Length: 72
Image 1 (cartoon, rainbow, N blue to C red):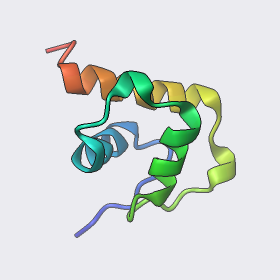
Image 2 (tube, helix red, strand yellow):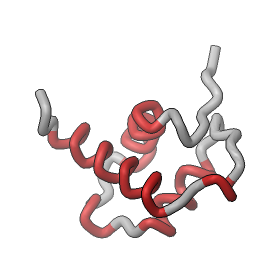
Image 3 (cartoon, rainbow, N blue to C red):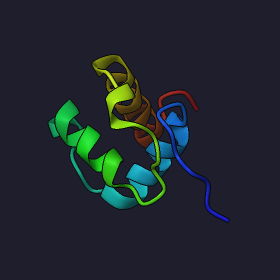
Image 4 (cartoon, rainbow, N blue to C red):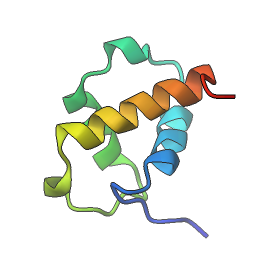
């Protein structure tokens, strides 16, 4: 069973992005590109108008932390 993703599911979004874009240089990812990738995820169902730069920055930071295991 798949889980529908919303803007509140930042960790699940990060895991899905890492599975799809695991080789991308995170330092080169801009917020517009990140939003485009998230909206294209097959299980993402939330309203694109609900996102803001703060949410996208939080997701990008969490992705960076997850990739480089900063808190483990």
